[in-house]
Length: 323
Image (cartoon, rainbow, N blue to C red):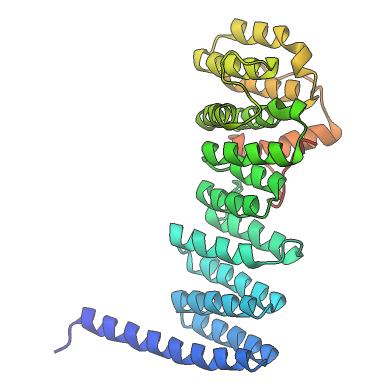
C-alpha cells in the first residue's frame, strides 16, 4: 500500500504538472497578444487556487505571470498580478524568507519607477514582511529595495531603505556615489553626517559606526583620518565614541564646541536632542522646539525607533531630504 508521504508527493507532482500545463496555455495567449484574456484567466485561476487553499501554487502562477507580462511591457497587468502575489502571502500567513524577498524585489525592480502601483506594492510588501504590524518593514527586504533603487540612481529613496536595513557598508558605498555624482565638494561631510545621526536616532549604533568608517575610508575627497580636515567629521567621530561611553558631560561639551559646524543644517541639533535622550539620559523637552514640517519629518524617520506604537509611516521615499 502507498504510504501517506508517497501519496502527498504524488499529489504535489500532479498539481505541479497541472500548473505547468495551465501556464503553457496562458503563455501562448500572451505571445499571441491576447493580453486582456490572459490577464483575466490568471485572475480566475488565482481565486480558484486560493479557494482550494493552494496558496503556493497561486503565488507561483502569479509571480511567473507577472514576469511574463513585464517581458511584454504590459505594466498594468504585471502590477496587478504582483499585487496578487502579495495577497497570497497575506492570506496564507506565509513566513518570511530570503527567496520570497528576492521575488518581491524582482517584481519591484520591473515596475515603472513613477507608477502609483509601485508605491502601493512596496508599502504593502513591507507591511507583510513584519506580520502586518506597525513596524517599518523587515531589514532584509529594505536592504534589497535599497540596492535596487541605488542601481536606478534614485539615491534619496535608496538612502531611506538603507536606514531601515542593517547594511551600513552598502549605505556608505551608495552615499559615496551619491555625493560624488550629485553633491558639492564642500558638502562631502554632510552626506555621511545625516546618515550617522539618523541611524543613531533609530537606535542602530553599529550601522552608524560602519557607515561612518566606510564612507570616510572610501570617499575620494576625504583625506585619511581621524583627525579629519572637516570639523563635522571630527564631531561625528567623537560622537560615536561618546555614545559608547554614555557620559552626558562629554556629549554636552561636544555639542557646544562644534556648534558652528552643527548650524550648517537646522536638523542636526534636532537629531542630537533625540540622541541625547536615547543614549545619555537627557529628559525630553517639555515643549518641542520644532514643529510643523520639521517635526513631522523627524517623527516619520523615527517611527520604528519608538517602543510605543506610532502612526504608520509612508514607505515610498526618503523622509528627510539633504538638498
